[in-house]
Amino acid sequence: MSNDPWWRNPNIVVPSLVGLLTAVIGPLVAMALTGSATVKPPPQPPTSTAPYTDTPTPTPTRTRTPTPSPVRTTATARPPCTVGTASPSLDTDQAAICTLLRSSLIDRRSCHSRPDLESVAPWNALSAITCETAADSTKVQLLRYRTVADMNAYLDRAAGSVNGLGNCKDGQESNTTWHTSSSGTLGRKVCIFLSNGKFQINWAFDTERVVVVREDPSAVSAASWWDKNACLLTSC
Image (cartoon, rainbow, N blue to C red; front, top):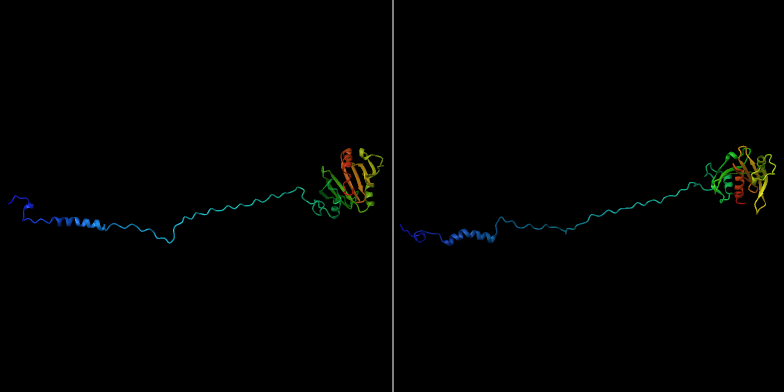
């Protein structure tokens, strides 16, 4: 038996080195050149018919509700001298008295009817109202008569036994006439004490057939007030 190495023995058939390399390395080279069958291609981008746009959410518009303008109210809202608006309401004859009043002295919105003084003794007035003065809310009664004779009949009853010698300005009973510095006689003026102690001044406007009545616990106060407020009618 020969001790030569196997590669020197011509009887041993050794596969060709080239064939061996081809058998082993060939498939690897082929895979490197062609790619593995298990490798997947990269995904295709999604198809779209239009580009994507980011549409912002609309912000709701706040609508302001208008604040109503305050409505002004007046405590004495009724119109002056209007039939049916006072309490008790004025009738046509009573409203006619109210329209005769000088608004600078009388608050004509305050006037209200006095049916208790109409056609009842001792007043027996055709129509009657009570109003307040504009300056100090002093109340006065206004009596209107159908005739001057009817008006004088009331003043005669009010005067009673008064002889007319007193001075009303000094708080004394009297039965006289009155006038202003620029007028003739306007009517009668009767000043008396009532049974309740109050001092009462009655003064007449002959042309309008109206008598105004003012009462006060103080005779001096009543006389002083009368000097400033006697011309309550627009004709005075």
